[in-house]
Image 1 (cartoon, one colour):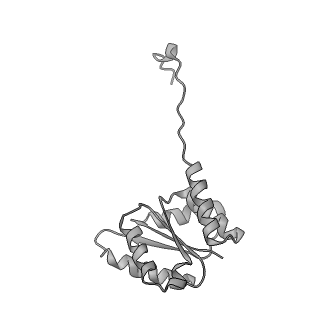
Image 2 (cartoon, rainbow, N blue to C red):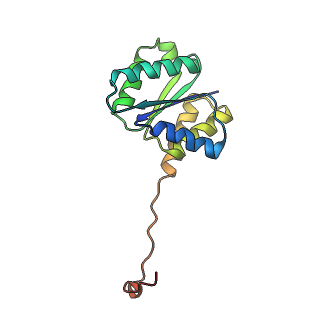
Length: 147
């Protein structure tokens, strides 16, 4: 079963996990990492390493981060870089985490998908979850204030 680590700025990761549990039910093998104000950035790498060890680094792990190139993402890269190559190949980092991405990851976990296929599916589904709704405005009704 895939392990999932959500690593974000602030308590976003805890909120995402909580929201995921509201929708999907109790979770398994999901850890959260929060970079909080005043925390030494390099301690995030230690937190990620500890989470990978808790989940079992010999098994596949997805790390979902909020922003590419930001501290949780960079510290995830550093943590993976310190792993032996045969273990590092069991870890994949995705960035831009949002609730639909996490729900997709949880679904892939339930389905027992392998790491690479899961990562590709999650990215595709996350992209498809973003949209724009623009209400058509009738030019004749612009001055109507019926609310």
